[in-house]
Length: 237
Image 1 (cartoon, one colour):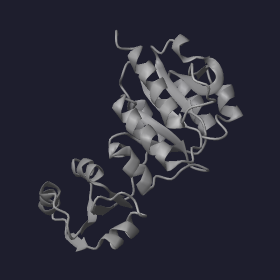
Image 2: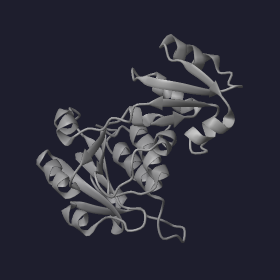
Image 3: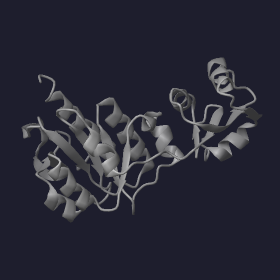
């Protein structure tokens, strides 16, 4: 996988992860990044802008692209049974399709203390360079759990003490729920919303109160608002 952009690279360099190759433009002058690459014995290949454009799918690479191993994902049993917080929080993505939404949700989840993000194996967005770029490196700091069945996973979460909160335009006000428990927050598909099977598995379905005359919010924005409320409600504990 290629990752690119100065901030993404800086975050990646904080981790003890293998860098296969580094490609920088002829006029890349960030000595701190170059020195860190060299200190890890990574060969720095100087190249032209068009080559970097190609490796980053014409993304905003800012003159640097790294070739790294694909982002590691985990199983349910790798992560959930080992969480030790009083109030655990996971985000489940119901077949999201937009890599920018996925990346933004990863970044927000990490910032707000989410313990893991759960995605399905099938009919879902892949962990691409765009996702990594949009997450600004946060994807390296929060576990991504892949599962074969979201419904079966919700049943396991319930047995492990989680309450299931789904987001939907026709739910109860998100301000009326007691979040002082372990929570799995479900964010639905950008166009279809939550699937019926997941709705039926929810303990609560919540909506964000809106004053403006709009139908819905972007998935990553909705996720951020709901997570902020969940975390804020626990501050006095």
